[in-house]
Image 1 (tube, rainbow, N blue to C red):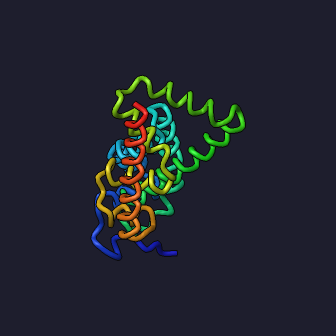
Image 2: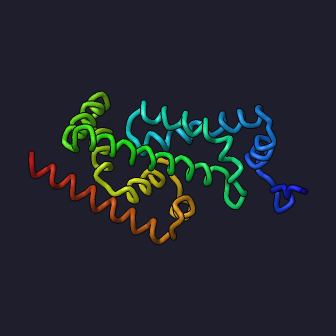
Length: 190
């Protein structure tokens, strides 16, 4: 059975070549892919999960699972776009699992106390932004992490998240409103 290579369809990027080689069992090609994209994996994980330890765990899990997942990369988008989706799906799973464990173990109040204790090590601005983002819905948090954190344009974010560019723009508008309201409420308490 002849395998249709990505190169038969269009000019290949370096990532696509590495993916083909990694799927074929080339460990060095897989190592180059990981080396090239580890920072992206960690950065997105950190922005979504909020702690270095959680981001490191998620990045390690993604790297361990990536050889099996590579077979699902079809080359219909850039490899980095596909990789964003892999990391975001893994982060969503982790957040659901963490929420379930926290709720089952001790309820939401204690979870918030633990989160605040973790963030005490960071500076005040980063702590405020993370706390504000954690109050956003998953859709808004993911969108803002890609737009502001990864500096992707709205069209690229739409491709990663599987929504229209207009939806991304609307979500960013909602993020701005929510953050302004939270800042205003905090100012009133001072």
